[in-house]
Image (tube, rainbow, N blue to C red):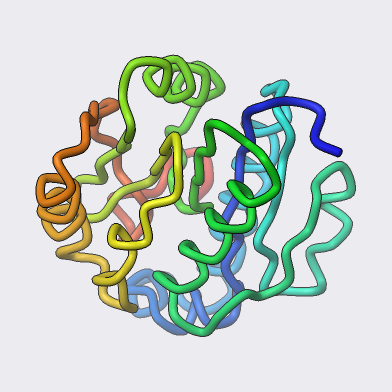
Length: 195
């Protein structure tokens, strides 16, 4: 039985595949890249802990179970990011939630205030988007499941936002943007205190 009509889903990607596919590795090496992604994981978990809705995590890396004890855990849902996101949203709405927001684990400037703002926006819009400077997004929320919003998402994120907006416009959905934030893709995106 669900406790709230709102759900937050954290998409916690596998650290090893994330490290292997990042531009950070070439700049600071394997060890420092893992350290930075550990900071991001802890930061995301802490930010989410300040919210009062039901919390889920799509967990690819079993070694991170300890961080997510208060969450309902979805195991790795698919190999493709778009399919994983789509399945997680679909499961949440099928459970009975009326508003669902998903965040990744790569945005160091995400705050509890932004999460609360995202849910407030969903009171008057079908979709809320947290756009990222590199062309992707750090947050996506909706009031019902729209599978068409995930058909374009693959492993390359540079055009996600543009394609997402095209899908939203094709469905004629009302949406609002949160502030544009950096997601960690290269050294310049990493907070100084994490280096």
